[in-house]
Image (tube, rainbow, N blue to C red):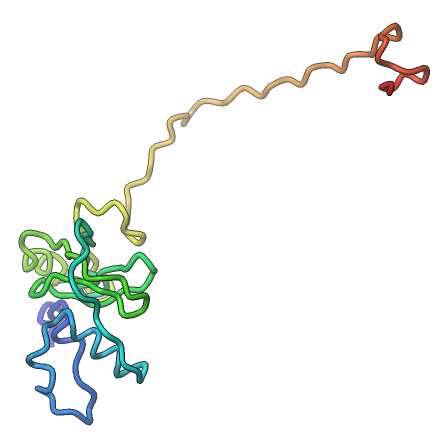
Length: 173
């Protein structure tokens, strides 16, 4: 199998039932909610997805190591899909938020397809918060010039007639 033949993974292909269940057991579960089913499997306890959407909340989706992922404000992340653009975190309970994908997700997948899987990374152009995004170096505004070294002022001898000094030359009480 060639590298280009390995597709970018999406939630519906990443979150699958455990081997003791039928492979089609989650076929009727929306892809965004499969993360919750998978999480229940892993932690062996019941978790309930939130009800309703968070108004105005949007999270940028990105490709990371060949998977579509979204980062929760709590620091957790999960695999997502453009086929069901919602995100809710089973770790902290962050409610359903709208995912922001590129207008053409397949174009982003094609852009990274020739790279090895560990180098398949893509970020939305408008995402300024991506912690792992490569950024161009910031030019040094002072390159080529030396900042002047400030000279330290010479110490001033105290005036012996100063009424604030005591007989020994120190500050009086």
